[in-house]
Amino acid sequence: MRDVETLIVGGGPAGSSCAWELRRRGLECLILERQELPKRKLCAGWITPKVLADLEIAPADYPHGLRTLDRIRVYLGSTALRATHRTLQYSIRRVEFDNWLLERSAVEVVRHAVRRVESARGSFVVDGSFRCRNLVGAGGTSCPVKRALFGPERGRLILTQEVEFEAEPRDPVCTLFYPFAGAGGYAWYVPKRGAVNVGFGAAAARLRGNVKSHWERLVRLLLKRGLLDAAPPEPGSHPYYVGDRGKEVRRGNAYIVGDAAGLATCDLGEGIGPAVESGLWAARSIAGAGDYDCGLVAPLSLRGLAGRAMARLVCGPLRS
Ligand SMILES: Cc1cc2nc3c(=O)[nH]c(=O)nc-3n(C[C@H](O)[C@H](O)[C@H](O)COP(=O)(O)OP(=O)(O)OC[C@H]3O[C@@H](n4cnc5c(N)ncnc54)[C@H](O)[C@@H]3O)c2cc1C
Image (cartoon, rainbow, N blue to C red; front, side, top):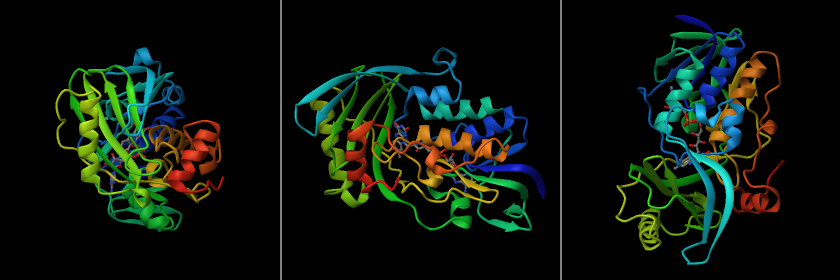
C-alpha cells in the first residue's frame, strides 16, 4: 500500500492544475492516469487568455504550437450570412498541452486505471493499493471518484463529433456555425499551428436528426465555404456533461473538479478554463487557503444576455 497526502485521479487540465498548485505550495501529491503518456484527448483545443493567466503562462513561454486567434467568424447556421468579430483567443493541441502541463507540475504520474474507491477512518483507499488523506476526482466524464463518493446527478449530456488532423489551415480565422444540429448546438473550424480541428456539439436532448447526417452536412459546409479542400478523416466522439451549478463538489476531504463535476460552461461547453480554475481551487482548499465551491467557477463563456440566452437553450434556466 502506498501512502500519499493527496491523490489526484486523472491527468487532464483539472488534475495537472491541482497538482501544480499543490506542488508550488510545498504539498505532496501523486497523479494516477489511466492512459499512457503522451495521452490523447478529443477536444477543439480553443483556450481563453484566462486559462494562460490562471496558470501563469506567458504565451511566448509555451514551447509547443500556440496559435493566436484574433478574429472569429460566425455563420448563421448553414446560410451564407456571417459576421466577423475581433477577439483574443488561442488554440493549442491537447496532446501537447496536457502533457506539458503534467511535466510542468513536476508531480509524479503513475499509470493506473482506478476502479475502486473506498473511504475508511478518515482516509481513502484506491484499488487496495493507494491510501490518501485528500482525494481529488479529476477523471473527466467517467470519473471513478465522482461515481463512488458523490451523487448520481450529471447535468446535460452533450454529444460531439470531431476530428483533428495535421495540415496547414487554409483560413486563419476561427469559424463557428451557429446554430447547428439543434438549438444551442454549434459547429466549429479551429485553425492551429500545423493542424486543423473541425467538429460540432449539441445537447442530446435538443439534437435534431442523427449525428452521422449532421457530420456529413458539416463536411459539405466546410468544403463549400473553402475552409477545407478535401473531406477530413473520420471523426471521433466523446460525450460529456455540462451541469447544474449549485451542486456538491466537495465532501470532507474528497473533491471533484473539471468535467468530473460537469463544470464546462453552460453556453459554449468550454471546459478547459473551468477545469483549470476548479483544480486550482481544490488545491487551495487542501492547503487551507480557500473554500472550494462550484460557485467560484464561472458558469458562462459569453457575457451578459448572449451567454444566458444560449445557456438556456443548452441547459435550461441557470440556477445560480
Ligand atoms: C469534441 C470536444 C471539443 C471540445 N472543445 C473544447 C474547446 O475547444 N475548449 C474548451 O475549453 N473545452 C473544450 N471541450 C471540453 C474540454 O475538453 C473538457 O471540458 C476538459 O478536457 C475537461 O478537463 P478535465 O481535466 O476535467 O478532464 P479530461 O481532460 O477528460 O481529463 C480526465 C483524465 O482522467 C483520466 N481518467 C479517466 N478515468 C480514469 C481512471 N479511472 N483512472 C485514472 N485516470 C482516469 C483520463 O484518461 C484523462 O486523462 C471539448 C470537449 C469535446 C468532447
